[in-house]
Length: 522
Image 1 (cartoon, one colour):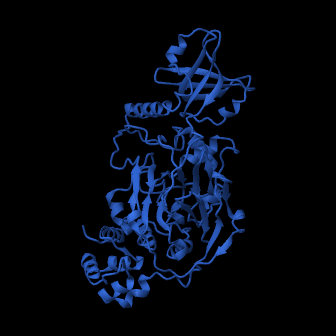
Image 2: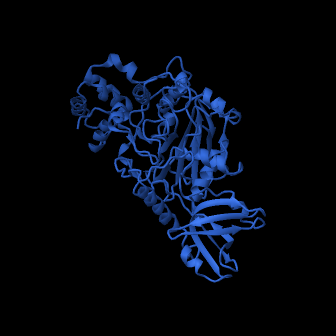
Image 3: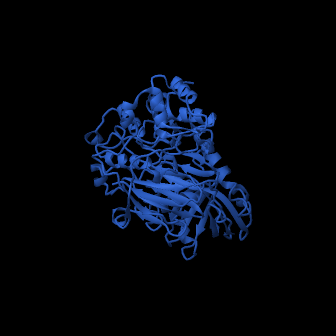
């Protein structure tokens, strides 16, 4: 395979036992015959050298005149400053950063871009739950039945150890006054004339009504329910056995004893989303400051970049969007995004998933991009997975989900449980339900597949979303929940719906401790 991309050059060097300066990799990638250039560079290296330097590559290629371009020095028209918002362990305190909360940070000095001594041989990434290329749904009725049955079985298995479950048809044959428990999918929620809550649960055998009395402590939990999620209840049957009076209610939830995994070395990942290249409001200067900073010694441990969707602005996403586009062709948007991606250090590992502005189907799960788009975005050999996808980076499992369902969670649940100002709390609800998009038939579209890819079968160590353009993070049962903001200033459409975005932020995650620093580049 030709060594035409920086990632392949880095991989080839690692296989031969060499490290390289990023600038050296960049020069080799830009050479007319990169494979031949690499061979010449290695043949002429000193015997005691273990790292390929840019100076050595320059001498081999006789291209010293191009060095100023390849070293990616900070632009004279950009203030390459990065404001450090927090280095707190979010397990101690949760936070949501907005314009009013970011001024207290100290401005961190940013040095001139220099070499990064990165040992790529220690890197390890595994990806699960990526349905790209495996879509089987045709939209037929039986496909929907299959995906909901799969959802029920997976989530019911997490609840059976907590209640003595009986199927609905078995409960119907029990005597009045009997104790009973049921695991079911919420098919209806309504308030009675007396103010009690009637929740109808459905399993694979039928439906059964469950009554939660308004004066019971668990009544508050009913307000956290969404249609189509799977829960367990137990209680006592009425005298005529026609209804279950609920004593307790259980969610699949993340175990409180969950212990997250960490990396074996000090290595960091930048977690961002919602770049929106192609919009007139794309913050190019902030992006340049971010990528400039990635080349500094301060960022030498940032080896991974994870982007949670909406790389481009798209076309026809909302009314009169065309009036706010800087690039009106969707393919040209991706070409420009790929150019911006080239500013990232050549040795960084990049993983991306699509969002609702990207050129894939809107229904979730969303497959990764087709070959035409992948060919356009060839910078760094970036890997593009489905939305959602489970990416394990050096032992740390990161659930990447763009986050369209957050709109629905925030609209349906009380403000203290879910809001745009604290998007991580809405993410807590999804963790509790163990599903990234429980409610069907609303804003979030569902594509029926042979299984439900939206179930959180495995508890992640980190849950990373975007979409709502708000920055917020915190820990729920030791899972770090992060919504990473955006790189787009407020659009006219956002003004009309009262969205004030948190733009130009880059959360930096220490994979060895799961501590996080949020840096501001505006």
